[in-house]
Image (cartoon, rainbow, N blue to C red; front, top):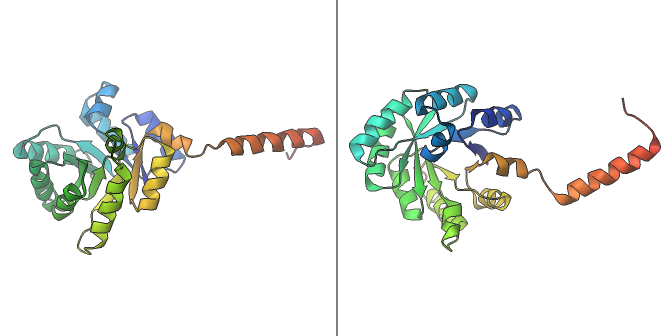
Length: 218
């Protein structure tokens, strides 16, 4: 499973990319607003930092507006993936943008039926929002499993499942087990994948025992 990092903080992206754990980046209007910078400048800098897809979201809600904004965003860099919402106009815009040769990430997906429409529209990625489904008492990961089954049943579908609204390391593990192609992960959650209390305890024990020997490897 590939890892995308869910942030518009360029310094975070650079640090994680240098560690070799970033296959792409997802942003949204909320993340862009936190930077206090123009969206074009932020997306251009991110696209120059990594080679993988960088999702940049339209803010228009109508078909014509999504097409206009989508083409402008796609013109920033060749690795931009235009994000459109899982609405009727969003699916229509996805179809047109995909036919124009642009990568498209259909976002705010909360059902397998929406994912089916996205695949039919030629989406590059579909983003089921796991955490937000969990928030209302549903099983967000079940939607990922349903989408995986539907996509596997039709060999013509090339859309990748991009598990989104990831909140915890458990979400990451479950997304990988469910067959998601990608998980987009906040930087703090990505770093926390390396943590386990028994690792810390074992390391402390080893170092204490080594200290008693008085030796040095170098």
